[in-house]
Each structure stands twice: as C-alpha cells, then as structure tokens.
Amino acid sequence: MKPIYLVITLILGLAMSNNKLLDNQIYKNVFTEKEIKDLYELIDTQKVEKTITIPIYAQKVWFEQPPESVVNKIILLANKIYKDPIKLEEISFARYSKEYGDMPILTPHFDNTFSTPRFTVDIQVRSNISWPIVVQNKAFTLNDNEALTFSGTNQIHWREHREFKDGDFIEMIFAHFSIEGEQYEKDHSKDMAERMVSLCNSFIRKTIEDLSNRK
Image (cartoon, rainbow, N blue to C red; front, side, top):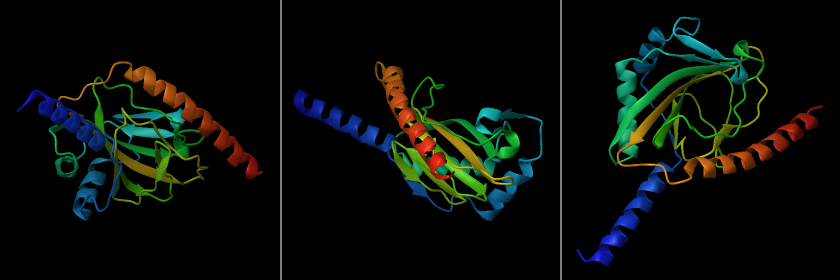
C-alpha cells in the first residue's frame, strides 16, 4: 500500500472509531423477564450491606456483581454495537430516590475517573417516573428495560431537572467498557472541563427558570 493511501486509511479508521464511540442510540428489550428476575433476586433494594448512599445525588449504589446472565447480556449487546475489541471494566446498580437525599439531581459532567476512554451502556431497569438523560444537549427518554449508549468519558451528559415526589424512583445499571487501543487526546481533561463549565451554566439558568415558572 502506498504511503498516502495508508495515511488516508488510518485517518478514516480513526474517524469511524470515534464516531462509534460517540454514537448515541436507544436499544429496547435488553433483558428477558428471567434475567430481570435473576437481577432482583440478587439486588435487594432494602439492603444496606455492600452499598453506599450519595446524598448529593439522592442515589444509592450496590457493590454486588449482577448475575452472570445479566452481565453476559450486556456484553453481548455492547459487542453487537461496537465492533472493535472492548472489555467490560466497571458495572454497578444504582437507585435514585428522595429517600437517599434531598432531591435526585445530575448536573452536566463527564466520567473523569477512568484512565482510558470508555464506551458506556446505561440501562434503565425499573422506574415509576420519566427522567430524560441529556448527552451533548440532546435528550433521550428511556423506558424500563431500555439502554442508551454514549461515551461517559468523551461526552458531557446529565439529567434534565426534575422534582421527585415521595416514592418516585429510577433504577439503573451502568456498564463501562474500555476500547482496545483507545487513549485520551492531549489536553482531554482540560477541553472536557471547559465544555462542562459552559453546559453547567446553561443547566443552572434553565433550572432557575423552570423553578421560577412553577411559583
């Protein structure tokens, strides 16, 4: 292959990889009824052992590894979506409810705790309210047993402002995959932080406006 064609091929390959990493789609019917039953046989939402409560988000997180059938289904889904080699690195189950804090809230942010980029699969397992996820200013509303794909490390994301009533809840599985060969660009954290600040300012203004209109 001539050098110029090799360069073009590499550029196109990187562009395609980046587009897949940043693709945002909703996938329906993630789990079977049995897989959901298996999950809740392991995850007791009243349990306090192996959990942590984060009052600022009104969130409770379980440190139980989900059943193998559930994990395998998530890996299968991710591999169908992202064709390059990926590996499940982190997975957790979380519940948002006023019982864990003043009010569930998720401001614009990026997942800056990972040493390499992540392909993210967020799955809404069970809920009794609607709470849209926003990725780069585009809102996605999940129904139960639906997943949203994005890159938590490369895309600013948040939840629309929503007032939870007593008894309102949403239960989620968060799965993060590393991508073979993917590394952060230079100044990645700086660039992401600058974008986050701008979106946070817009989020605050819109939230204040929404609250003012409800008075």
